[in-house]
Length: 484
Image 1 (cartoon, rainbow, N blue to C red):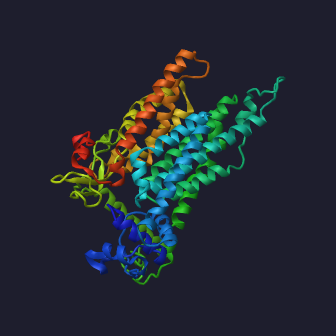
Image 2 (cartoon, rainbow, N blue to C red):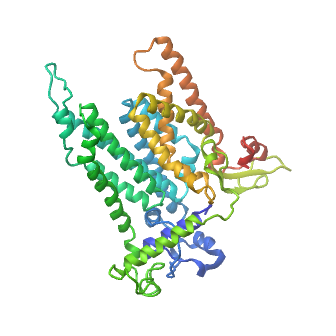
């Protein structure tokens, strides 16, 4: 077990068997060794554990453990599967947004060769699971946008040449009807919040974004009052399809905890309402709901006051340039041990470093500027959507700069960085109709950039996979002093 796998792998095994996370303290300091030795033969504890993240991500990890066993392959399988699927989703999303198979596949390929995505997909942490649900929700909303525009276009008057013309009466009063993709997005966002609470910011941002897309759709169709029409016909339905749906999904994810015994042998704080929380003005609510509310309040206090120093904590200002990556695992074997190829008298380094592919992330810094320019001055909805995804996953962390937080949280907005870089590369290549010389120079420049990013991923491969390399080779990959 590496890094926080020591919590989530065991929590996942307990939650799929007990319905709640259990404390492994009965096995003492050797709990991890016993898990690796005995796996599923080890008795699942019955005492509840105090945990600070909702259950969805642990159910996901636990599904892999149920299928393949309580071992490293089992607890890493689902994050690997979701990491792979997220690449495919991003290809489809990019293709739909850019109307280009090349740029869509490029966005997915860029994420496939990102070190942070690769490491998180091979590690049973919650952030990779959260990233998948965020990407899935975004993809559903993009499809919903296209479907809504198709419906409104079908209602517009047809011109003599077979096209459609804007019509204010139709555009101002049109109702989009059933929108299953938006409801599906609400489910995905509920699963995101049920994995980690920072999914709440994504939920809020995406809810606003989808309404603004409706405003844009009505405006293009000729609406005289697109904002008023969206407020009247779209905002309430968008809210219902996202927020209440997400709340229901979130509460449903606690079913195992809710159904566990409320006699001290169930989930942590499960019997709070019947003991310490007895009485008060909220007794008309079910005991399980009051107990859950108390639990969540205690977790919130934990998060906002978490400031214990950690070797690898970092400020979000540094994330986008990979200022302080997290070392999940490090060993320094001698020659001949653990595949160490060093000469006699030297040492090797084995490390799993949660760091993005540097050239990709540094290129993304410029891509973000391009996307913001494109959104501000060209009103490009694609740029706005990408900026929204980055902002929702990134900016909230600036509210908690004094907290103990880590760079790998950035994996949540990584897909949008890849979309931004793909969009920038598309601009470098040049739009259709450009001269042959312009396209040749642009394509050559873009090709060099993509090849450099791929080479950079290969160069850092030993740090992503924990391969033993001579210590001098390891030092040559520490491009910044803060990476050590």
